[in-house]
Each structure stands twice: as structure tokens, then as C-alpha cells.
Length: 88
Image 1 (cartoon, one colour):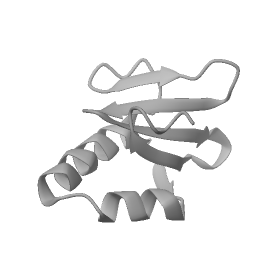
Image 2: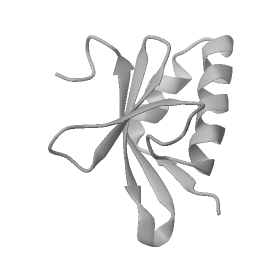
Image 3: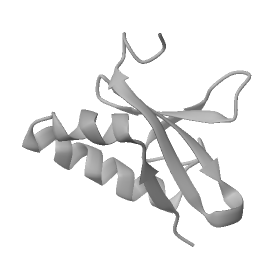
């Protein structure tokens, strides 16, 4: 059972601006995320955000905020940015 990831426009732009090695790290993280998008995933650093249905994926100093649509097995990547800027 694998999930599909849908990227919002802001996330796509953020990823496109990064260098090749970072893109590769993100891709590896996303492939792992597709297998298990929940904090029980031992490979990735995932946390559920308080008072929200959203989750945070950490890749180095970067953060991705996403939601899981269980009924259609889709992960919606809502936001992406560096650690200091994403929660604003």
C-alpha cells in the first residue's frame, strides 16, 4: 500500500530552487514517506503538529508540512521552507 504525493505550487518552487544533492535527499525522503507517512516511520523524522491534522517532515534544516488524505491514499505537501521560516 503506497501513497501518492501531491505537491502544492509553493513546495514545487521551493524544491526546484535547491541544488542537485538536496533534491536527491528530498526525493529519498519522499520515497520513504510514500511507504509510511506517519510518525511511526523509523527512517524519517516526522512529527504531528499540535492542534492540527498536519505533519512535519524534517530533512536536514528543511521542513515540509503535509496532510494525509487516507480515503484516497494521497499525501498533500502544503508548505516547504527552512526551519526558521516555515512556522511563520
